[in-house]
Amino acid sequence: MTGKRWFRWGATAATALVVAGVPLAIQVFGQGAASTSTVPSAQVTSALTAFDSTPAKTAVAQCPAGKRVIGGGGRVNGAQHVVITRQEPVHVAAGDSFAVDAREDEVGFGGSWAVQAFAICSAPVAGLQIVSATSASSSNAFTGISASCPGGKFALGGGGRINGGNGQVDLSTLAEGASVSSRTTAAGTEDLNGFAGTYSVTAFAVCATGAFADFEVVKVTSAQDSTDRKILSVACTGNKRVTGGAAFSSIPGVVESVSPDANRLRVGVIARENTFTTGTWAVTAVAFCAS
Image (cartoon, rainbow, N blue to C red):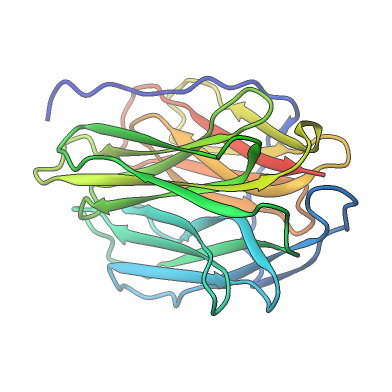
């Protein structure tokens, strides 16, 4: 397919740290420090699939009983031609969770790989709800859709899902807004040779009621260059802790990891070229934060 554009959303970095790598995640993380404001207490849980050659995998990180999911992330471990196609917060009576789908692209991957899901789970939060929006089905090279919180609510986290795409459309997510977000966006980008079928994109925003000053989004964008793997970490400021994560990559990069750390201080993001090229690209890492 010709005529593809490179998409990159600018960001303002309040606090950012470039790290040498993001470690393979532990299965269950400890309790984060308690807050006296919007998010009274929270912890990070994780689920990892088997390492094998199954071409499509789903990992679901469950919240403990009585906790509600407010955000999360996902990671592909051990593969090159695998893309994340779903990062979805789920509120159901049986228990909240964060689900992550990944699948091999048209090239495929001959080795073993796994997908990992992270859920950030909190004690009940005022006005908590998940808002979603789905784009029309199309064959566009790029499709974006936004989910907006109702008036008076702000985003604690977000996510997205590619509906269709057969592994040839990768997922990016982003928090809109310079310092606080009440809208999240999910986007699907076809790979460099395009996708012959149609697909749609669903965006998710996890919304809550609270004072404007209690919420924060922090973004950092990598250099626009031809580095084939980019690793970033974005941190909350002051006494705020991570409540969700997101990452957006311009092509030919694809997001490989959105990983909150054990203490909810930062979000690690990894993106890589799905097809090696000398062209330049960039990735934006996002941390949703609240006190």
